Amino acid sequence: MTRRGAVASEDSQWYFAALAAGRLELPRCAACGHWARPTSASLCAECGSDAMTPMASAGNGHIVCTIVDHRAVEGERVLGLVELDEGPWIATQILSDSDRGRPAQGMAVELRIMAFDNGEPVPAFAVARHN
Image 1: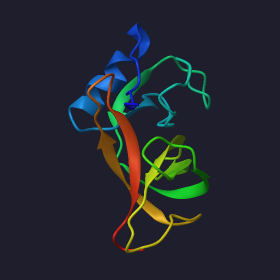
Image 2: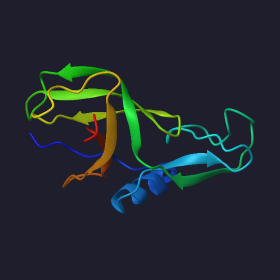
Image 3: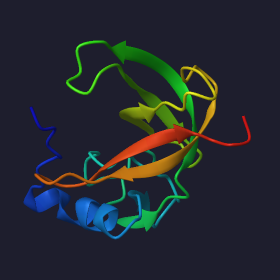
Protein backbone atom coordinates (compact mmCIF):
# COMPACT_ATOMS: atom_id res chain seq x y z
CA MET A 1 0.00 0.00 0.00
CA THR A 2 1.30 3.46 -0.91
CA ARG A 3 1.08 6.32 1.57
CA ARG A 4 -0.81 9.33 0.33
CA GLY A 5 -0.25 12.96 1.10
CA ALA A 6 -2.93 15.35 2.26
CA VAL A 7 -5.71 16.71 0.06
CA ALA A 8 -5.88 20.49 -0.29
CA SER A 9 -9.13 22.42 -0.15
CA GLU A 10 -9.77 25.94 -1.39
CA ASP A 11 -9.11 27.23 2.15
CA SER A 12 -5.83 25.33 2.58
CA GLN A 13 -4.17 25.86 -0.81
CA TRP A 14 -1.89 28.60 0.61
CA TYR A 15 -0.62 26.19 3.28
CA PHE A 16 0.21 23.36 0.88
CA ALA A 17 1.71 25.74 -1.70
CA ALA A 18 4.12 26.99 0.98
CA LEU A 19 5.05 23.40 1.94
CA ALA A 20 5.65 22.56 -1.73
CA ALA A 21 8.00 25.57 -1.86
CA GLY A 22 9.89 24.30 1.22
CA ARG A 23 8.30 26.52 3.89
CA LEU A 24 5.93 26.00 6.81
CA GLU A 25 3.56 28.96 6.97
CA LEU A 26 1.12 29.64 9.79
CA PRO A 27 -1.59 32.28 10.22
CA ARG A 28 -0.33 35.25 12.25
CA CYS A 29 -2.47 38.11 13.47
CA ALA A 30 -1.38 41.46 12.04
CA ALA A 31 -3.11 43.24 14.95
CA CYS A 32 -1.55 41.48 17.96
CA GLY A 33 1.11 39.11 16.58
CA HIS A 34 -0.55 35.89 17.82
CA TRP A 35 0.38 32.75 15.82
CA ALA A 36 -2.27 30.11 15.04
CA ARG A 37 -2.13 26.57 13.73
CA PRO A 38 -2.90 26.11 10.03
CA THR A 39 -6.43 24.77 10.58
CA SER A 40 -7.49 27.62 12.85
CA ALA A 41 -10.46 29.84 12.15
CA SER A 42 -10.05 33.08 10.24
CA LEU A 43 -10.33 35.15 13.45
CA CYS A 44 -7.52 35.63 15.96
CA ALA A 45 -8.12 33.66 19.16
CA GLU A 46 -6.34 36.37 21.20
CA CYS A 47 -7.87 39.64 19.99
CA GLY A 48 -10.68 38.64 17.61
CA SER A 49 -9.17 40.45 14.62
CA ASP A 50 -9.76 39.07 11.13
CA ALA A 51 -6.28 40.25 10.04
CA MET A 52 -4.75 36.75 9.91
CA THR A 53 -1.91 36.56 7.38
CA PRO A 54 0.23 33.51 6.47
CA MET A 55 3.79 34.01 7.75
CA ALA A 56 6.82 31.71 7.57
CA SER A 57 7.58 29.68 10.69
CA ALA A 58 11.20 28.93 11.60
CA GLY A 59 10.17 25.26 11.71
CA ASN A 60 11.68 24.58 15.13
CA GLY A 61 10.01 23.34 18.28
CA HIS A 62 9.95 20.57 20.84
CA ILE A 63 8.06 17.33 21.31
CA VAL A 64 5.06 17.55 23.65
CA CYS A 65 4.13 13.86 23.46
CA THR A 66 4.53 10.82 21.19
CA ILE A 67 2.80 7.58 20.34
CA VAL A 68 4.14 4.72 18.24
CA ASP A 69 2.03 3.36 15.39
CA HIS A 70 3.11 -0.28 15.18
CA ARG A 71 0.68 -1.00 12.32
CA ALA A 72 2.06 1.52 9.84
CA VAL A 73 2.62 0.11 6.35
CA GLU A 74 6.30 1.07 6.31
CA GLY A 75 6.93 -0.31 9.82
CA GLU A 76 6.98 1.43 13.17
CA ARG A 77 6.08 5.13 12.89
CA VAL A 78 6.31 7.76 15.63
CA LEU A 79 3.47 10.29 15.74
CA GLY A 80 3.17 13.15 18.15
CA LEU A 81 2.43 16.72 19.04
CA VAL A 82 5.09 19.35 18.43
CA GLU A 83 4.94 22.78 20.04
CA LEU A 84 6.50 25.21 17.58
CA ASP A 85 8.74 27.99 18.89
CA GLU A 86 6.06 30.41 17.64
CA GLY A 87 3.50 28.79 19.96
CA PRO A 88 1.05 26.59 18.00
CA TRP A 89 0.98 22.83 18.45
CA ILE A 90 0.95 20.58 15.38
CA ALA A 91 0.03 16.88 15.18
CA THR A 92 2.68 15.31 12.98
CA GLN A 93 5.00 12.43 12.22
CA ILE A 94 8.28 12.56 14.12
CA LEU A 95 11.07 11.03 12.10
CA SER A 96 13.34 8.64 13.97
CA ASP A 97 17.10 8.59 13.74
CA SER A 98 18.57 5.24 14.78
CA ASP A 99 21.63 7.00 16.26
CA ARG A 100 19.50 8.94 18.75
CA GLY A 101 16.93 6.31 19.68
CA ARG A 102 13.18 6.89 19.78
CA PRO A 103 12.05 10.55 19.91
CA ALA A 104 10.84 11.55 23.37
CA GLN A 105 9.01 14.35 25.17
CA GLY A 106 10.99 17.57 25.45
CA MET A 107 13.41 16.86 22.59
CA ALA A 108 14.07 19.73 20.19
CA VAL A 109 12.90 19.10 16.62
CA GLU A 110 13.36 20.65 13.18
CA LEU A 111 11.00 20.76 10.21
CA ARG A 112 11.23 18.23 7.40
CA ILE A 113 8.74 18.29 4.55
CA MET A 114 7.50 14.92 3.30
CA ALA A 115 6.51 14.75 -0.36
CA PHE A 116 4.28 12.06 -1.86
CA ASP A 117 3.49 10.86 -5.36
CA ASN A 118 -0.22 11.22 -4.52
CA GLY A 119 -1.43 14.26 -2.64
CA GLU A 120 0.10 17.32 -1.06
CA PRO A 121 3.32 17.50 0.97
CA VAL A 122 3.01 17.42 4.75
CA PRO A 123 5.17 18.70 7.59
CA ALA A 124 7.11 16.21 9.68
CA PHE A 125 9.79 16.82 12.28
CA ALA A 126 13.18 15.25 13.01
CA VAL A 127 15.08 15.34 16.27
CA ALA A 128 17.44 18.34 16.16
CA ARG A 129 21.17 17.67 16.03
CA HIS A 130 21.83 19.66 19.23
CA ASN A 131 19.83 17.34 21.56
